[in-house]
Length: 275
Image (cartoon, rainbow, N blue to C red):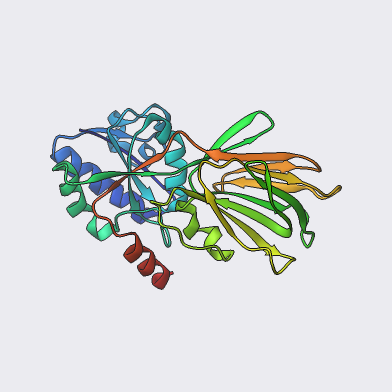
């Protein structure tokens, strides 16, 4: 087994945990790839330096919060490399292991006592570009205190005309992120669906909708002189104007995560209490 390691490097406790993990894996004669950004902090292990873009590991350990996991999986999921996520963030809905349990879980990993979970992703199309998201597409106004007018179609059928601060199109993985804060439902990741959630809609009868994942969702900007901004998994921003369209479809490439047990509801409930 070859194992890669990527990590946030802005917290000393994360870097120290990384150092302990590297030593443990080397003691167990594991082939390693350590991301270049992390090697800057772990200079004693520079011989194992590999950029995350060039990793060929069987599994990659990701030490950080949901943001770190999202960044890593955007690069790794097209290569079908599973992630074992270790929570060094705040709530960490995408993370699997808490720091105090890491070495017990590494023992299970090295004994192949785990399974791989596939998570639905969505492809977002605009201006001849295609971006894949694990959590969500968020559309919001670029002008504070100004609402957007959006026409939403599902498989070419008009689903809603929304006047709101914005709109979220989420996967089940993203249902515990911004979508939940905006009043959307928590959706089991085994459900093959996309969730459409208006953000602070003007009309009281505008409600969240759950649609089949293989639907084609189209969002059209319907008001002149009201620009919108699309944010994809919290990382990429893109501006849109009158009559611009965004199309969302189920991705052919799922994300892959290492899991040790099925505990979605217990994990969510615990994290919501902690959060």
